[in-house]
Length: 231
Image 1 (tube, rainbow, N blue to C red):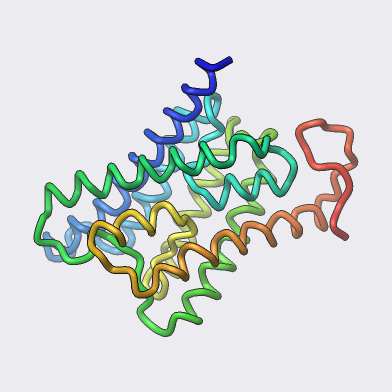
Image 2 (tube, helix red, strand yellow):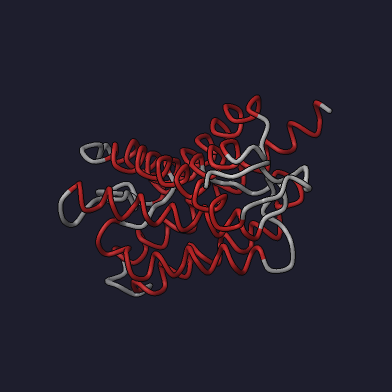
């Protein structure tokens, strides 16, 4: 049992490392190489990385890779509360490790892919809130219990992340993930607006759980699904 728990935490740590290394790495490389990756390329990098990690790690840890998603699964009563802290800690370690590697590779880069509002903080807060609501709704709709796994789960979740990054990335960064935002912000010491990316995704995930219950109306017959509904 202990060994399985350690494998889950290792999977969350490694998966979040890959997400932050590839996703924010695409942003850094795009800056360094004069736009060679492009905004579309950055959005696809995030989406494809999540897709690949779901297929690689979904059966092990559920492939949350995101504290807001972990909290969302807990609120949906699909995830044991005892594991919320260890999962979030593992995700933060993976994210910080990835940003540390990028800092070593690109020591003069000013942001390391940190998410920064291009307009006002309130505008980005609303974007991040709604983007994470949509993401959590999709995740709950295609996942099994607290695990993002299955034939189409990776495609659905990866696609919605890429879609949201495509249209909202230029405004708010389309993080939807406190670990992904906190790690480069700490490494680059760009903390002015980090509160937006720590609070809005968690609140959005919570409302996404309520919306899922309203629309899908789980009947309680599946032990992996939350009993009852919010509506």
